[in-house]
Length: 326
Ligand SMILES: Nc1ncnc2c1ncn2[C@@H]1O[C@H](COP(=O)(O)OP(=O)(O)OP(=O)(O)O)[C@@H](O)[C@H]1O
Ligand SMILES: [Mg+2]
Image (cartoon, rainbow, N blue to C red):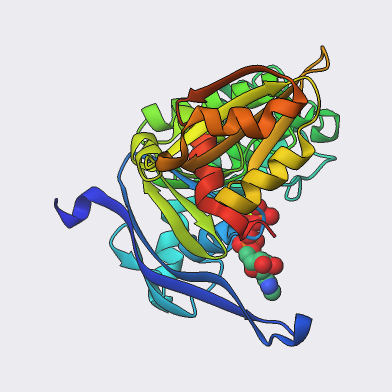
């Protein structure tokens, strides 16, 4: 593959922070990660809190200097000071949270302010901003103060901001966090639309279904390291020497969970159903997928149903992330 097909090439990228918590002078937030992103992809960065996702996004968007390693964005080395300005004109970032909006200004006025910051000539601004408002479906709300916007509308105006310089790469750091399912769905379809329009998108998320729905390829990070890489199938296959078991019981299987955890080192997830039944799911090495063994372990909780399930991205994620959760 030609080098110019890559939007991003990351090699051994590392970032440490000095901190003095727990008598530990250095925190390795990102620990020697390597991956490549092709132009036009939606690339996912998944991982639990503290995995290093935001730190990675910051390094790849020139907001944070790597401690070591290399990242080449659109063919330009991020660690080379003289590339920073060029890169900032060709990429943009939407980070979670609600900072960066002037609440007393309307959506349109906010966009005009950002267009000025990018030195976009006034006579070009009108059409650009109208087009962006239409793209994010805020044309009707353009002249309302953003303080009166719903959270979904705020997120859409944030995305419009980040599009003001028509970036080739758009970094989205948890774009749907805290949004209700319906609004999240709208944001996802907007992300899909941007991708269809040719943008390369790097997306961090905690939501497996979001990654499964949007991302062509992804990395799973834990404790600053990459623990999984590839498309959804690759990631599922990377733990395919495992099986996922699902047991429905009438009582909460407290000791059974403890026993599979200590014997098989398997993390389980229990959900309570409305009618008072408990569903326990866990992933175990394939050589342990003998159901009669689990029938014995769970018998005392009155088994209603037991079976082997197909691995989901979430199963794979939980298995790969393991104890990485902070
Ligand atoms: N400026 C900083 N100074 C010290 N430690 C930091 C700093 N920024 C991040 N860290 C630490 O680096 C680690 C990775 O943080 P980062 O924000 O990249 O994680 P994340 O994957 O984005 O997590 P989340 O899902 O919570 O957003 C964490 O342990 C965090 O406490
Ligand atoms: Mg983060």
